Each structure stands twice: as structure tokens, then as C-alpha cells.
Length: 122
Image 1 (cartoon, rainbow, N blue to C red):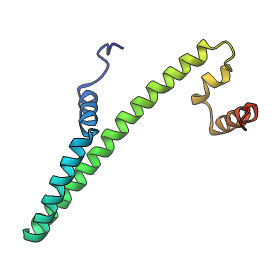
Image 2: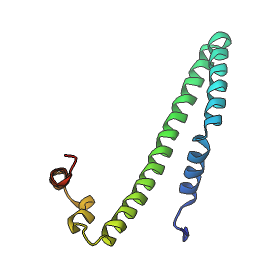
Image 3: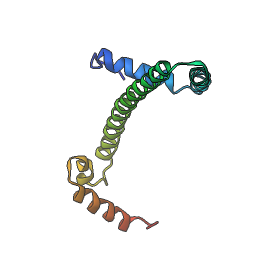
């Protein structure tokens, strides 16, 4: 699907970070490096070095939280649009389901109950 220039530089960068950090080999490598740095800092480091390491870890954790939030929110929006399109294409689809994401929590609960009652699996 063409991008049409809608992704900002920041969004593109966050998706690249997400893509790289989701690789298993990189996670293993970074875990090993982190363990070595942690052991060396605790064993041979001063209080200032331990504090600096803790600060770096906190900043990296916060950045990862934002990266994950951004990419998951975008993926969720994409999935929702695809599901909306499938519902619109289905002749038996309930129109109320198409706009359910704009409804209240009570609307969602009622729709869930209605689908549960209609399901042969209960």
C-alpha cells in the first residue's frame, strides 16, 4: 500500500527501531552485552557509574515504551480499517458493527452479548 507521504520522519524512525528490536538475535546479543556491562559496573564500578547505568536503563526503557505504543496503535488502526472494509463488503453484516468503535462501552457490551447469543459455540 503506498505511503502517500503521510508518515513523519519520527514515525518512520520508530517503525525502523521496532523492526530492528524485534529480531531474536539482536535481543540475545543485547541481553548478553547488558549482562556483561551490568556485572562489570557492579563489580568494578563506582557509585557514580552504577547510577549512570541505572539512568541509561530508565531512559532506554521509556523510549521502548513509546516505540511499542506507537507501532501497536498504528497496527491496531490498520487492522480496524481492514475489518471495517470486510464488514461493509459482507451483505449479512450488521451496520451497527461497522461503527462500533465510535460507540460507548455499553454499546460494545451489548454487541458482544448479542454475538455470543447468536454463536453456535455459546
